[in-house]
Length: 394
Image 1 (cartoon, rainbow, N blue to C red):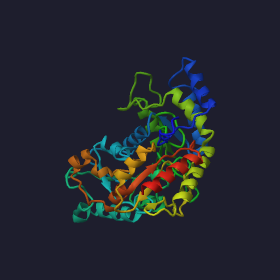
Image 2 (spheres, rainbow, N blue to C red):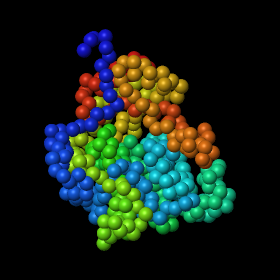
Image 3 (cartoon, rainbow, N blue to C red):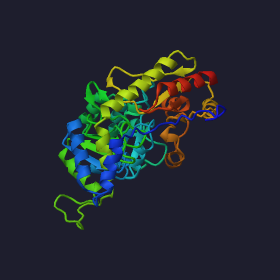
Image 4 (cartoon, rainbow, N blue to C red):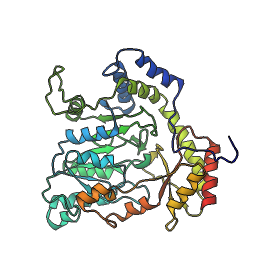
């Protein structure tokens, strides 16, 4: 490479082995590309890992969240408490069923939904009247239905504070859908993320802890929810239905055999992936902990194992994030704002009337968060380059 050309460091890279590639090719060399032995093997391995009786492969984490919402009986106008600081899929899965997402602001340390706010929102929404109105959007919820569920998100691989959330839900018979799409392998008080509510959803996009290319998986210990989601992902075919019989209005949300084969192969190395990601995060932490203008990620005591999905720093207030990102990009270093608040996405503003100032903590994190290059295949030299250039830019 010409010395004048900056070295390019990507946002993320999948960690694929010869065994992974061979597993996919083994499927391609058969005639069984869907609904075959590979998806059954992947699901069985996941059941063993998670310790729940239902593990259902789907074609995306978004599909998994949508199936969970449908199976939980979330319908037109129903209310679901969730977070505005997430990837948009956690809200979109509710909008697909014409439900109304009710946002609660987040904890400033973790970016996860604030359980104290959730408890208050539950009480106020069930009380009705003026107490309920302060949690509802300005428009789009005039004729809302019942409060049905909580949908917390394990942001960036750190579990939400689930015990008080589940306690509030159990007190009022609400379903808890845990969005663990970013947190495979994380533990909360030594319990696995994704197993802490009624339904857990994981995702396997190429930047996740393991990948299937596109894909996701739902876990639950609830027989009704498990059998319903199993039917719904397969065009609504209930147990006993023949190929062209459809008991329910369903979806084509199945995971194909090639994706399942890759996922099954990758799952065998989950612990090594998590260890490698922790090592990269430690390199970043060591180099950035004393850099003026940078806040490194905070891991709270309830997180007994962090499952690093991305490495997101927060720039000090007043630092021009766009200028920093531009300068890094000019040096071949890919970075990205993380997250942009959901309630300020154009379609959410148009539909529900949200505006700046509605969720100040989320908006502050959205203004200052910057994801640095991160994956299990990053080497220490690359981390050194990123940190050195970031320090010089700041």
